[in-house]
Image 1 (cartoon, rainbow, N blue to C red):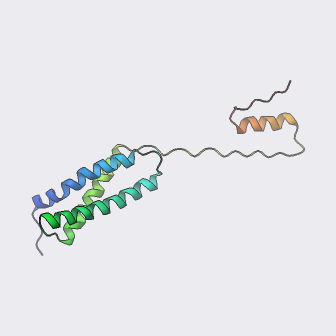
Image 2 (cartoon, one colour; image 1 turned 90 degrees about the vertical axis):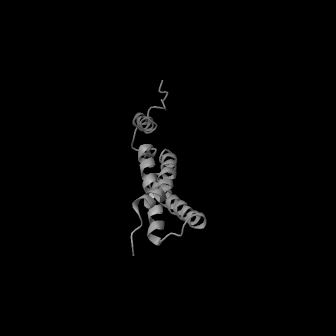
Image 3 (cartoon, helix red, strand yellow; image 1 turned 180 degrees about the vertical axis):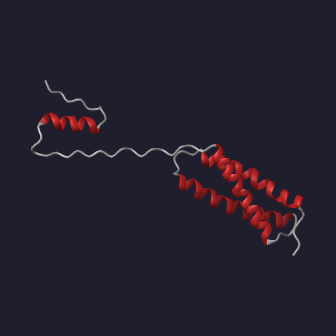
Length: 128
């Protein structure tokens, strides 16, 4: 088996890198997704877009080998990784879970203080 010329392989990888950059930039900046969701979207979109591109190239231009199809998929994933890294948004922090435990032995002032600490100062007790 003979390796394809380098320029042909570069031409096959260019659409994958460019479109992958766009997809990665879009999904990497999407703050509602967790990090694992963004990585999963990259893997799924790279596989689907790479296979679709390979079928289009085979239908319109030249027959491709398995190695070339894998190269196209990897070029999409590489472009996705570069785009996601360039626009990575931090994942949102989970809200703090506060629990208030009322014990009958506690006096009202300490219980009010626990409520105030749990609500981060949003609640002020009216002890006149």
